[in-house]
Image 1 (cartoon, one colour):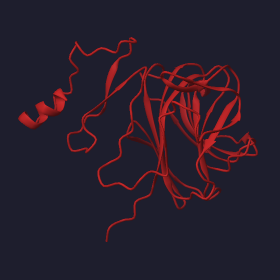
Image 2: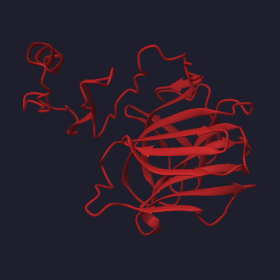
Image 3: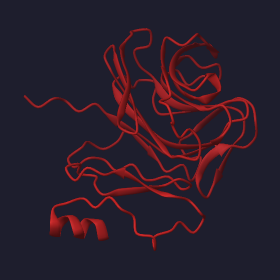
Length: 237
């Protein structure tokens, strides 16, 4: 509210967070949408509690949306999941998978907000079949693989070698930093962004539609704060 009022008055973004605004749980507040031209501006997230994904003005209703404060409409596939005050997380070490949505989905954007506290990483499924031995695409935020973003194809629960790979930038804050992963898949083209920066844009037609989902493995200590799936907006002539 303070930042909104200041921008209206001065037409400048301060982008500072006053010291009196502190997370009572000890988290660090960070800017999520800091562009005054963005209809979602201003928005601040917390390194512990994450943030709420806000749709742009005039957008269509989501295909799916959850603040991950309950298991409603989530389909656990493998492992034990738990709901905490901060969101959804694996209850113990090992393989964890869940799915949500509709197998008939084709073109959409899935947005996931998550924080990795420690461990080897987490994944986001898209165009997946939702089976226990899942098939589909999987994006991975993967410090355990040498510190990389990657995309794999998964067949019957078996991950194939990454066919898209990108190293984390030097000095990248891997842990205890909330991240927003956005995956847009339309036709044969997929675009993947992390915190608004494009990491991958590629063409592949192996999987043409399906659900979305989440994954952790090994010793991953990940909290998923919220998820949202939006339809692809039709271009205006």
